[in-house]
Image 1 (cartoon, rainbow, N blue to C red):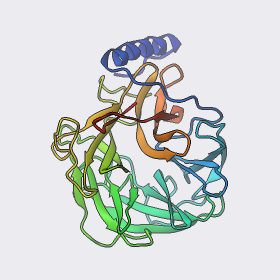
Image 2: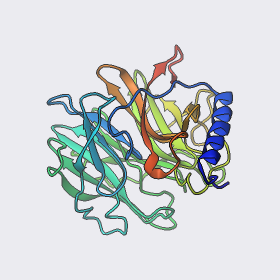
Image 3: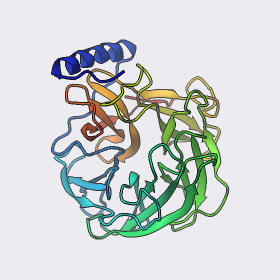
Length: 331
């Protein structure tokens, strides 16, 4: 359906969605966020080792950078990563998506995607910096991973996982859903090994994306987003078809992921970690960060139904992850 025009229509829709969401499952509200908490589609968070400053990166343009003294803010805009766009020859070079930040050795890496919405003409790139400050980033262009029409996967939504011996790159969105491959020791290029599938929901449009692998104890947890991410101000998804955060786990990073019921993640498996509730709508584009003060948190974007549904209204959400006796995360 289309979003009703006028504040009264928006309020009515917000009330309806709130009742629907809270009747399904109770989730904790996101932690309080101060400062600039919008401009945060597909966020990526990290704390700088040298001084404890938090950095937040987000989709759009040259990938905005916000900094804060705490994961809850106050967040301030300080600039962008690719101020002149990506060096990759792609129509989306001036509008990089889905940043994924990691410290590799003594260098910060931000992986990003360039593409056009709804196509497989996609490339994953990387930029590096010793400090993450604006103006210090070096764009290395493609990591050697791309896709085109007819491929099994869509090469966007990159996520690096570093093990002791091997660097793994998980990626994918719709089409064949989520894949993984290996990267070289410097984590700047892929090894050339053929990507292999780690998750598939073959119903409808195959709506899985935004893989994020996190290790806790003996398990590797594959967090991912499922559903419709965007365009809520133009067309609202049917209830339950909006973005939500899912998880599967495995004893090996390379596959064998199952949900809490034992269903394979390659056979439509996935346990829901966070969905719409209260005034929180469409949470997704997530990552997981082991915060030195809070422990593991899941961070994501969402829209506040009392404010607006536009992509520009996406806000930063952070929830502490609780781990049950069975080892499954919840909020």
